[in-house]
Image 1 (spheres, rainbow, N blue to C red):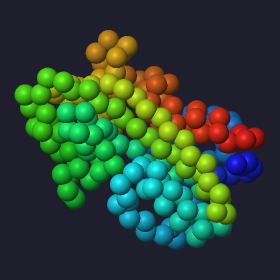
Image 2 (cartoon, rainbow, N blue to C red):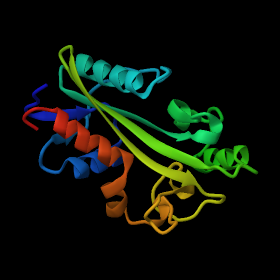
Image 3 (cartoon, rainbow, N blue to C red):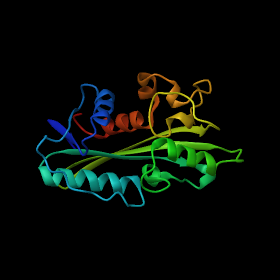
Image 4 (cartoon, helix red, strand yellow):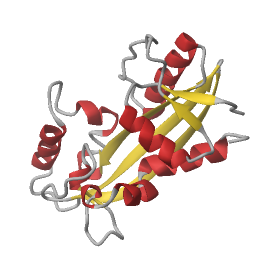
Amino acid sequence: MRVQGAITLASWNAGKLAELAALAGSRLELRLPPDDARLPEVAEDADTYLENALAKARAVATALGVTALADDSGLEVDALEGAPGVRSARFGGPGLSDADRTQLLLERLEGVERRSARFRCVLVVYRGGEWCTAEGVLEGEITRAPRGASGFGYDPVFAVPGLGGRTLAEIAPDEKNAISHRAAAMRDLMANLSGA
């Protein structure tokens, strides 16, 4: 798939745009949807990251007549048979904060010794019935208590080998961007997009 011109993020999340744009550098021109755009509601209830990301990218590309980029990502914990996985953002049900979900995760892992886990991200670029996908993974383990004030989501309980036991919430954003699952997915995406 060849992409020319701007790619519209299938989200209003300016923080996500900033992170993805930093990862893409000058190779991709990413932007938020226009202020007056009406984005379709997309239920993220599929069983795979790819299906969720594809549904979001397709819906926005079709509604706005643009090339769209969507992502879906989650945390997979081996001792929980891959949970929370594609349900990471909804783990424990509606109304929970990131801290609540993190606490619930730690409670489910109480007494568990093997705490291996991974973050997985799938990116999809969609335009006119054609799409390109990419995936990135970051291996690590779940700590026994939250540490650090940076990042978001499960970052305070996700320690990465090679970081001296530090969690993703204990490292600088640029250090995280160099190793993250989203960074790996963006590298894969740029390799897969001809002309990018």
